[in-house]
Length: 221
Ligand SMILES: Nc1ncnc2c1ncn2[C@@H]1O[C@H](COP(=O)(O)OP(=O)(O)OP(=O)(O)O)[C@@H](O)[C@H]1O
Ligand SMILES: [Mg+2]
Image (cartoon, rainbow, N blue to C red; front, top):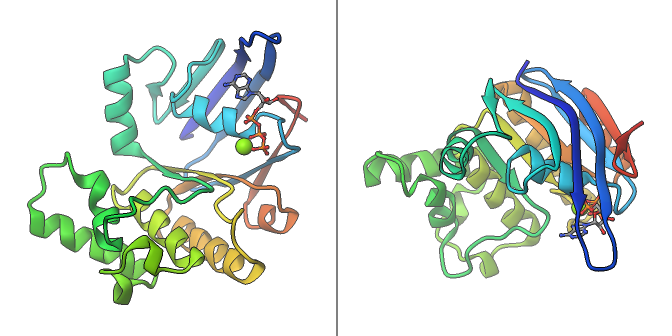
């Protein structure tokens, strides 16, 4: 087992009232699982991913990833843990506009002890994996949407994370490109045995996983 949540709750306090975004969410994920998370807009999917990663604080409940207690960890320990174990792929690619593809992929290695050459080599290998080594010196604006998303995936993978958290990674792409990205994630999942949790609106995309979680108003149904 690589991830376990127990009675996870998240309430947002807002001047217009409290929002119960997650209600007693409990589930377990095994190493190598490809879990898809579906649910209507506002059902708590993004909140779940952010809470799992400790990027927002839960109101109550437990989260353990690889035996690490996300809820009780200090901010410093948490960011270290994220850097070493979690890769994020978000809907908007969030590439740095003035850095080339390979420089974007190298970013997560900034704080690592590797030499510049080793960092470059690692990033290059990741670009090869997503089939973009011939675009390594392109800026994001000189890449297509699907290529930008593949750079974002390469960046999420460069630290060899144990877990990938993906929030609508194909949300902005046309069906053909979506399918490419989904196949790529599946390949990473199967070849590298990296565990993936992927939020998606698309029933077709949800079929790529081996397990499904559906949220309704912040509860697993
Ligand atoms: N910072 C916040 N403060 C108050 N309420 C919030 C905040 N962030 C999200 N919410 C509310 O929490 C609920 C869950 O939001 P969340 O972003 O997790 O939904 P989602 O399932 O990811 O939706 P979508 O599919 O539209 O991205 C929503 O009702 C939203 O309005
Ligand atoms: Mg969302």
